[in-house]
Length: 331
Image (cartoon, rainbow, N blue to C red; front, side, top):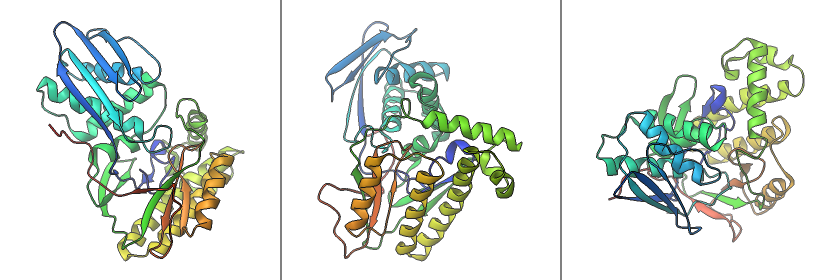
């Protein structure tokens, strides 16, 4: 889950995600022959394909095929296997269910093969390739890094221009972070997410910078619409990440709430990534006493993240989330 720093990862900017106490569990066992079976327990479906030629597929099947192909391309001797998975991360909520699935499948197949686990940053890159090239969603590395490198009780400040990582204590001092489902499902591949990425590339090219986060604010404001607003969001969101880090270090949770509100306003007005269901959910959480609330993930639906002070009661349908350990082998 990303506390703040949205749509900055693929723009060489800053983000502050953390792993949560929900996830996907994948269990792998060896098979005879030369094939892989992937079983989605939650929907009761199976996919089977040759180990040497996974081929393409759509929907959840693309994840298993892509993971096998990318692991083999990276030199991992993937064994013939049956891999089953299930999870308790709501799909389409902006809570990184895709990254959780990629990480779980990778670690299960690597563990079964007996191979040494790759560097976690490189493994995050591999998972990102699965999502980009096999699933068809142009995500950055944010979700994958948070899933694979998260640490209990901490957020992870990521500088995507350098991939410098810094763990930041996430002590809530009795405050609560919750999510609430907007009722509008989010899909990276099917929403306006890829369009926003293309606009950001266009803005960076027009400004002559490799990453939009490196642009000068004055020059960015001179871009034509909507490129100027896309750049404005990215640059202001980077500043909000560091303001949030400073507020957390100072124990000022009220200031963190204000940054969440400002992030949501920017995502809504400058990035045009909200939908009416999300706005209704933000208003409902604020009316219940949230100090700050913002849309999560790629936008265009999904869940809303809110920060509640100790004396406020979140709505009954809100899900309490806590910073937890990242992906790991459990058996």
